[in-house]
Each structure stands twice: as structure tokens, then as C-alpha cells.
Length: 302
Image 1 (cartoon, rainbow, N blue to C red):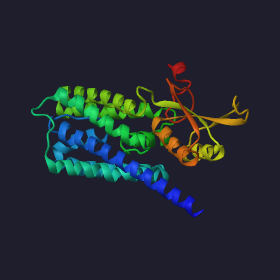
Image 2: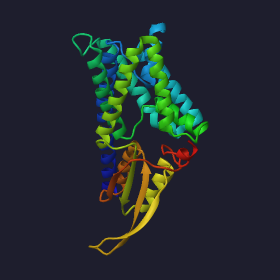
Image 3: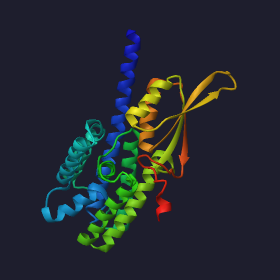
């Protein structure tokens, strides 16, 4: 029993170490992208980053401080409207990422030798995408406009998918950036967002989509199914299967989820059953009820 507890403790310490390594590298790259590439070249972006860029001009407040304030407001809104469990998912990044922004502001570094908005737009997307991809890979979330979109979806517009709400929010922010900084800056911000989204997907799943299907074969079936249902809050289907070699009947778990959620499930399965078999299948689109899925009746209503 003692050795088993020590083994569990070592495993948890190892996982935390890997988590922190990914988060530190990811946050450093993201903060470097904003402070050392985007701002010196006069660019903007979507999300909280874009809101901070818009507010930075008239207020004169440091970018990192504005980001801290907005991230904290999102965390507070998430805790009040969605509950403490959801707020815990974004708490760590709400603290760590702005700290890196503050750090790079004090270094006063500019990656490019001279102002070049085209290169800056490209590399902002690349560095920012790597940052977010690394963070998502470990199951964490920044708690930016994606959290705002989730709140709007759950509380006011359940019939509209989160991805569409998020698209509208980021579009409004980018258009607003065009009003404050000029149309060209808004167009460059759009280029950055496109590169950003593709790099995030590449870091996590190559060029996979926003929804993946997991098929899990494990001896810890009940524990894994309970985790997916009650922690991830996704549906679970069971399929009876028989291994041709062993002739042993088993149950295969099938679930649809987002790439970030799949990483959380993967980590849980790895902890519970290191011998489990997990298949990830690319899904082009999903029609039906569920967070992040397209409404089944949308096309009919058009």
C-alpha cells in the first residue's frame, strides 16, 4: 500500500511538472508574441488581446495591467454565472499569462529589426497559436472570449453554437480595431487570427477540426464513463465488442468532444488505466444538440 501511494504521488508530481513546463513555454511564447511583436508593430488582434489594444490608446495603461483586469473580470463572471468548477479551469492561466506579459514589458524587446506589419502579423499568429496549442494540450484554458462565448451560449442563446458566438465576438473586436487603428490593421488582425487558428489545430491534432470522436477501450470503464459524463459533461455511448485474440467481451466507450476536452479525457484515462486503448477520429462536423455542435435544424430554417 505504501509503495502504491508513493507511486501515485510520483505520478502526480510528474504530471504537474509536465503541466508547468507546457504552461511556462506556452505563456512565454504568447506573451512574447503580444509584447515583442504585435505592439511594437502597431497591430491588433481578436479576443481579450484586441480589447486591451483598443483600450491601451485612450487610457495609457500598460497592456499587461489591462489584460490582468479583463481576465479577472472574465474569471469573476465565469464563477458567478457558470459556477466555481468552470472558474477553476481558467484560474491558473488568469494569473500566469498576464505575469509573463508584465515580464516582457519590462524587457523592452522587439523581435523585428524594423517595423514590418506583414511579418509581424504572420509571426503573431504562429507564436500565439503555439502558445494556445500547448496550453490546450494540457487541458487548460485562457478564459478569454471563449469563456464569454460559453457564458452567452449557456445563459442566453443555447440555440446558437459557441463557435458562432465566438466568431461574432472576435469579428466585433477586429472591426473595432479597424475603427481605432485603421482598416489595414483590422485586415492584418484577420490574417493573424487565421494563422493562429491553424497553428493551434496543428499543434494539437495536425489539421483536425474542432470536434473529435474518442473511442476508448479500458478496464476502468465505469470510472472513465463517469468522468466524461459528470466532469467533462459530454455524452457517452457504449458498444459491445469482442477481442478476436482473447475472445473476451468488453465495452467500448464512444464520445464526441472538443480537442481540449479530449486532452483532459486522455490524461484521466492514462492515470486510471495505462493499458487502455484510445482512438482519436477526425470529425468534419456534428449536427445535433450539444456544446460546440451545429444545430440540426439550422439549414432547414434558412
